[in-house]
Structure formats: structure tokens, C-alpha cells
Image (cartoon, rainbow, N blue to C red; front, side, top):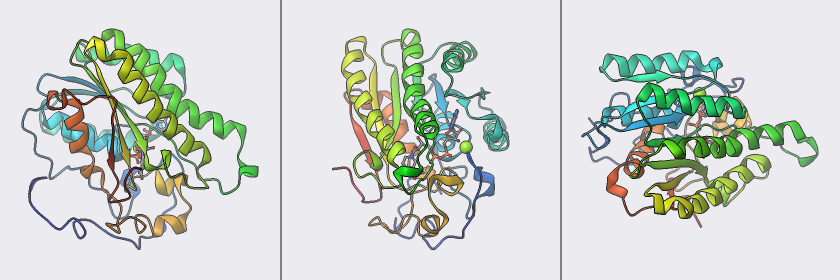
Amino acid sequence: MNQYNMKDPTTQYPKPEFERQPQSPPGLAADMVPKPDHGERSYEGFGRLKGRRALITGGDSGIGRAIAIAFAREGADIAINYLSAEDEDAAEVNRILIEEGRNITLLPGDLSDEAFCLQLVEDATQALGGLDILVNVAGMQVYVEQISDFTTEQFDKTFRTNVYAMFWLCKAALPAMPPGSTIINTTSIQAYKPSPGLLDYASTKAAIAAFTHGLAKQVAEKGIRVNAVALGPVWTPLQPSGGQPQEKVQAFGAEVPMKRPGQPAELAPVYVLLASQESSFVTGEIYGVTGGGHLP
Ligand code: NAD
Ligand code: MG
């Protein structure tokens, strides 16, 4: 059973209604019900990223974990970043890849700190013997119903984590990246259709889309491509750990035509495509994976 077996996508994965399952941020995949599918038992690689060296932020859980598994099975050596509160999830990714005989480097730390971002790129480049793929997946999302309750502290932290970190990591990584390298950012349907309770988060995702378009134009002449993936609802710890109120977690994904949330395993193949040489003429694009919620 791999990602190529034909199935009905509407019944392929769990649908709402889900259990209430509050967690404190950043949340753990280990504590989710049902468990997300990161492709642990299904993703089959064919050497599409053989010899490539990738740094993936948010690689412990959710979409980042699915990307780490897929990239490793496609032959890449990888380094992942996450917060130390997520050691349990990172250890699980580490175990899976080590059992498969793959190289993985764990580099925990807080991306909202500029100095840490610079150090992270340096450490990843050293551990991997170079860097030719940067995947910015990490992000925070804290739901706040009313603008009157939004604190400057949260607004600032969301921008530092989602936007500034991407800027710092891209800036630090580009000088190390040879022609053929790829950067992939992670945005959201929220960039185009913001929820009223996600003012800061949605704004960061719009900024990521604009940054992706602009940076792609700037570095095309260096032979470096920059794209982003825009996700609809995906079953990850981001949502029950404060990204949505619990009643929205219970109905999560019901609003899209597939009537269910996506699973991280359904995102990884798009990141593989954008990272690999197969997508050599694709740059400055935002690739939607939304269960039918579609980009404008
Ligand atoms: P996730 O919780 O599994 O991943 C987010 C990761 O961000 C965490 O694992 C954590 O390691 C990292 N992170 C957060 N703050 C950090 C910090 N200060 N320093 C370092 N790392 C930090 O959830 P996910 O849904 O897989 O999220 C991945 C990306 O997908 C995010 O950018 C998110 O905005 C985006 N996204 C998710 C959804 C969804 O429905 N799950 C929808 C659209 C976009
Ligand atoms: Mg996590």
C-alpha cells in the first residue's frame, strides 16, 4: 500500500466529527485522536532527491514530519528544526528514519530569534555537508475571536515565527545554495480567505505568499527556485493546541468539498515535486492543496 494505490479520496481518511482534544501549544502529534498519517507506512520513494541536502523547519510533526519522511525515502539527507517542547515527536521521526538507515540531524531551537536562525543554517549546512533545499514549514496559529483581545505580544510573535524566521533563514541559506537549489515556503488558504479569528496568522500567510513571488524573481538568475504550498485544513497539532477553538476542531475539514481535513501524508508529494529537478521551470508559484477549497 503506497501513495500510488487508487482509492476514493473522500473516504480515504477520517472525517468529522472529531473528539475535543485540547493541548497547550505547540502540541504533539503523539497526543492526537485519531493519529495523523505522516506517510510512515505508505510513502514510497524512488530516488527523486538522491544526494540532496535539506533543512526542514517544523519537521517533528504535521506537514514537516511527512516531508521529512518523504524526502528521506527519496534519498535526501535531512536536518529538522522544532521546539524543544516537541522532543517526543522529534524522537519519533528520528527513530523512523534511523530504522530505515537514513541520516537525520536534529536541531531544536526557537525560530523567533534571529541569532538562532543564523546558527541553524550554519549547523545544518555543516551537518549535511552543504545545503540545497530549504523548506520553511514551522508556524504558529493562535485563534482570538475579537481584535480587542489581540495583544501586541501575540501579533509580534506570530509575525516573528511565521514571516521573520522565513526571511532570516532564506537570507542565511541563499549564499550556501548552489544553482539547482530550491526553497519551499508554507502558506495557507487563509492568505486569501481569512477567518475572522485569525487576523495575525492570515496576515502572515499573505506576507509569505508575496515574499515567495518576490524572492523567486530575485534569485531566478542564480538558478534557485522559490515556491510555496498553500494548505487547506490539515489534521495536525497546530489546530487543537489553540489554532482553533475546540468546537471548530470537532468539525475540522467539514467546510471543504472533500468534507474532511487533509492528512500530512497528502501534502508531502507536492513538496517532493517542488524540491526536485522535475519542477525545473516552476518558480514563484503558490501550489494549492485544499480539498477543493481552492485558491482564488
Ligand atoms: P504542526 O504543529 O505539526 O507544525 C508546526 C510546527 O511549527 C511545530 O511542529 C513547531 O515545531 C514549529 N514551530 C512553531 N513555533 C516555532 C518556533 N518559535 N520555533 C521553531 N519552531 C516552531 O502543524 P502543521 O499544521 O503541520 O503546520 C505546518 C505549517 O502548515 C505551518 O506553517 C502552518 O501555518 C501551515 N498550515 C497548516 C494548516 C493546517 O490546517 N494544519 C493549514 C494551512 C497552513
Ligand atoms: Mg510539532
